[in-house]
Image 1 (cartoon, rainbow, N blue to C red):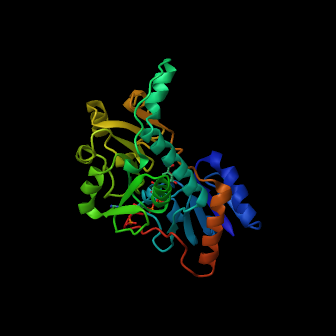
Image 2: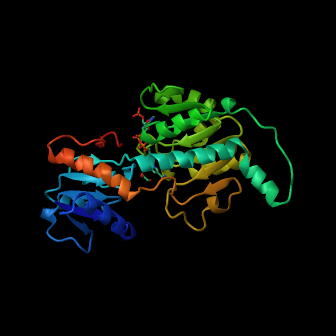
Image 3: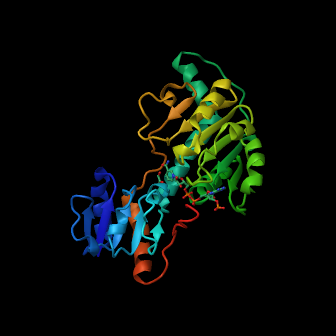
Length: 310
Ligand code: NAP
Ligand code: GLV
């Protein structure tokens, strides 16, 4: 079996080890330097393949994403349409995302940013503590990642809701869905987490109108994609005081350009797209399972609906 790897070179060694650990007789070639005989590859393991590249490997049986989000793969408008594109759903990725989300939800709920500023300046001062059960946390996107984090937030006692395309029935989580559900969902959400895929319908979803629908003093955690947010609208809402603070892990351009106002904005915390990174040793289990399904002539798990965009 032959694997083609297209991603940042510094990630390749760990992936080679993980994949060859599962398929010891396989060959794992790193694009572009190691590619020989394009027709010989069975599986492409990719992050953001160059447009038009994958269609030149004529015998691929599957395109396996290195991440949960496949917007970077779907930017290739010339993808072969007769093989599955499979996105990553992995225990470590899911648990890592829930850790990141809960860290910031608790940070905002317990107002740790304010306390850390005060104590850094030698100020001893207390604020009234509020009941966790009254704190309304909302997930825009309640799929693989959102539902795990939402369940864990609910287990901590937060009042949790999710917004999705279709109705969800998850114990302890209020479901809002579809275009009609968006504003009521936002109206009640004091800590908003964005965990949507980036598609034509979700691009720019955080804009002046949706920000205005959040209650005064809401906080935002974006750990999906930068293009969900209209940056100027978020900065205006932070400056006006309507939005309390934002933690942003993802940006329109990454790395975030040096002169971007987010770097120095007092109400913005920037993290460098690390909300949850793929752990090859764990994600290789999922790759192995899907490859076995494809080899057995069965449909793989988590196949992307290319038309839907996720
Ligand atoms: P998923 O399982 O596909 O879940 C997507 C959720 O979004 C579903 O609840 C879906 O609703 C909802 N949704 C999609 N389009 C919608 C629309 N137009 N209106 C309302 N709801 C919509 O995806 P996931 O695995 O949870 O991943 C979510 C995203 O997280 C990824 O796409 C990626 O961009 C991002 N991510 C970021 C990092 C990081 O480190 N920052 C790491 C991993 C992933 P339905 O279920 O009703 O279809
Ligand atoms: C990371 O951003 C991912 O989509 O897995």
